[in-house]
Structures are given as structure tokens and as C-alpha cells.
Image (tube, rainbow, N blue to C red):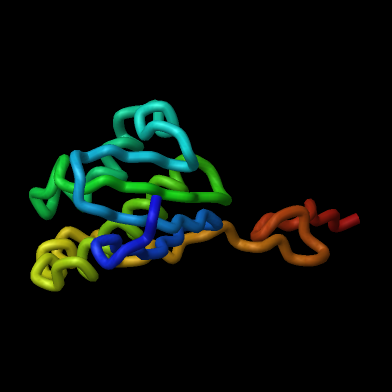
Length: 132
């Protein structure tokens, strides 16, 4: 896909997933990591999560989407793509910002796995205490 002035790009992150998105005017074709959208995200909730910014802005089947995403699992990747799409839509049309912001699509979800600490079996769990 050639990058031109009609292409809008953005980056989205969620947990450890990072998604880069290229949005061009077209017929609604969605390619993720070189695979078809329905093939990559097999379940309907994940597909709806990616399509949420388009549905909120009433722009379904108006743009072609190419995404490259890595890290985390499918849920985190879908969240990263959702944020990237919302950001690129606001770059394309600043009027959409209010609509997408009210829907909570422009907020980066900061929740991530807490790191394991030294001297413990996990992030918060402690080894069993023995009095004697």
C-alpha cells in the first residue's frame, strides 16, 4: 500500500500490544498482519471492538484499514487497533473528536500486568509464613 496524502496513520497501545494503522478511503476492507479481518479476529466481540470507532462515527465501509500489530494477546491487540483507528479518524476529521471522546475511544487503557517483585512468588503474593 503506497502512502500518500489520503492515508492517515496512527499508533495505539494496550497492555503490551502495539498497533500501527493506515486508513485510506475505500470500501471497508480490513487487513490485519496481512490476513483478513474475520480470519484474524475469529470472535464477534473482538471484531466489534475493532469496528467500534467506525460505528460511533457512522463511517462503516467508508475506509480501508491496514494494521500491523504485535505483542500481547488477541484482546490486547484488538484494544490497540481500536485506539489507533480512533486516533487516525480524529486526525482525518477533527470534528469527530467530541463524538469519539464521549464514547471513551480516545482514552488509552493504562492497565497492564504488574511486575513480579524479588523475594515473592508473584506481583502481590507472598510465600507462606511459618511461625515455627
